[in-house]
Image (cartoon, rainbow, N blue to C red; front, side):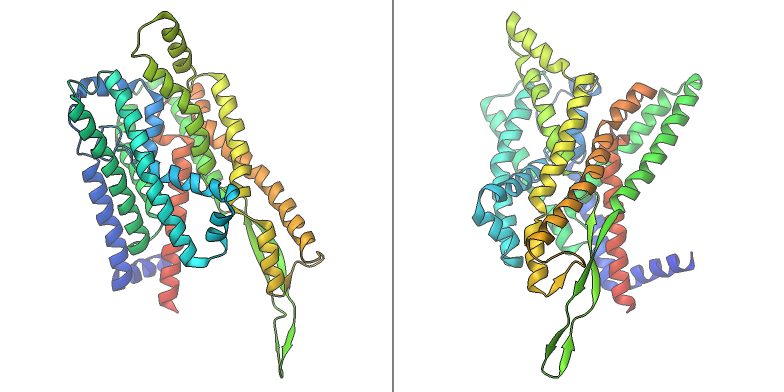
Length: 423
């Protein structure tokens, strides 16, 4: 405990560290102020009615950082930027030049790669903004809009998406932690008071065992998220001894830490993007008349998070995308080549192809555990809803995974800053 208070004292007394933390807090205040400024033409009563009965927009609200709940000027949040980053990562498989840029050209190459992601964010923001505004207008949430009003709203939400992306990158550069993750984290945490208040408002004494079950499962899952997020499979690595002149170099031993959850929360975002697409089409089609269109619309909207088919497909997609994203971001062949260039080897494994195959085999095994874990986390809200009847989005598995991951990352980075100053 004494060590903890000493660290707090060091954090506050160190000018550079204090500035970084205060910058993050200031950025979050600006973010929350922006999320409270609505776009023009909203029917508030219709919006509240629509959001209370729509789990689809509840999930989107998580990734918008809470800006969608009142149709703020940053209603798209960091969603377009995340999508652009994912697309760029996928393109590294198909475009060798992008792969070289990201993996082989160092810091300068990664900066150019990030710049391409920012440029791609603009058209993606326009597409997502237009689709979202069209759906909201079809539900009579945006009323009495002229062509100029529609264009104005679209420009506002695209500018808002770029602004929140810029704020996130400023947090990453001048603050502590990943700015985009912190913004999503802040949006989730901001929803907690209202959702807890809702639970208290609908409190029923006869349901106390269900509430206790909810709390127990939540605590267990939080502990599981921490364990899996921190879990690593160390692969021992030995450096060969080399003689240069009259001195001997190398001969040390270390290890390669392969994370069990190598892909983070990205596979869940992938799966959500695919599974929410039919609901978006169904909601858009519901504005048109006609028996056939009405049936198609009802079928697509019926494919919701309450159906068993949705849960099964959700789990399978998260499982598959975990393997896919790990394969995109982690290259065993490049790692094997780097080890060989630096005179390092895995004991008992030949350098080169054999090392690459060994790392791939180990990675495949631990990714299976990580994929099952992410699949369970993804469908956890559905399981909780069926067991307890509680539909709190901000207390669901995906939100919990993001919150715990961001908190752990912040603690590690603050500890690293403190340790650097102590030494």
